[in-house]
Image 1: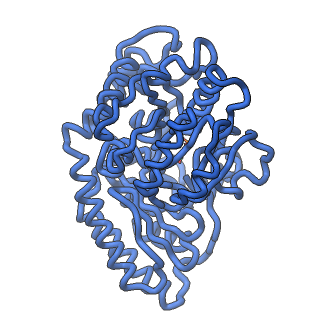
Image 2: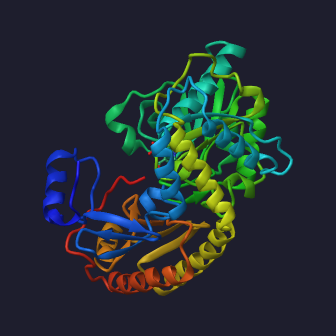
Image 3: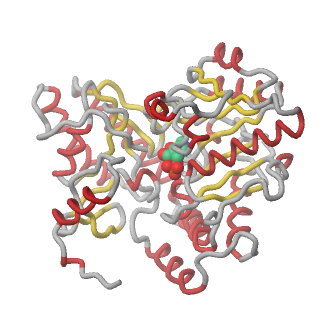
Length: 428
Ligand SMILES: Cc1ncc(COP(=O)(O)O)c(C=O)c1O
């Protein structure tokens, strides 16, 4: 199907979306056409600084020349194959991912096997199934409990939703999986009380992303590691949002020095093409078992080739130090906004996963910023979350901060910052 970029107005695109796409997302009133680097362009050619980066997927921004070339070359060879066939890239990417985990937690032995799927939720399902399967085989059917964190986000499919620690997402869909217990992040006493011999997994986001960008402490993660070992449960880290370079290290767990048994990755992994993965320790390589799990579209040659290209670009363009440097600058600027404006409660986060918590609704602020050419993401009603591409530089931060400073001044003075105010928005 051919299409002409200028053959439709933004209004007609938006109204067709409203007519045909189920109203599950609270969409912004903009119709986007293309992207380049840290910028997106709408159908009228207006440019936006993209600090949302496709909910953290577009870590290399838009239309990175190396990703475009790899995409085009692979699309002309083979896009998808049954996972029953071998091809060059899936194993190569798995080998590379495992090698990145070697020594990542200091003394740990690293992870040494990979299962691919498409989205994050699907990978969480795989990790839960692995934990249950390992427990069943070794200790029988009674060992199926999962301990997860209040405020966590693990996805929307039944299993991943069941272990998501936010009742507002689960309410309409109960009952979920049995045996799930939620505890407060960083509450070691609650953790100890919850984990026992019927626990098959402790599931943790080292930095809770969608929940509002809250970090786990090293002590808490160390205790989770100890309890998992003591009770033969798997320690699973969901790094779908905080992993793969977002904190300025390949994995968020590196800065804690605690190694999981299972690591879940997603979002930027396929360079924008759906790809997620679970990485497991050697002893769990056979944990799922032949024909006990699967994913038709998971780990396609195209997605895995893009995954390899993504990792190479991050390494060869030296982006991890850049994430750390720009992240530190962003943090400093957000702290200054916190000092300057009474409407701001707090700034927090690491690398290019940061948040600004507000005293009131954030959506009007995000809408007003959009009108001024800056794309922000509001989560949890009152938190602006920054999840930009790794290409972000200081000058981009300055642009965003100037817009935010103005809007926050108005908000602090009690002025309306946008025509309409939507207070709740589910946004991952
Ligand atoms: C930590 C975490 N886990 C799981 C998911 C679910 O991933 P997906 O939306 O790709 O299914 C997300 C999505 O934001 C996430 O941030």
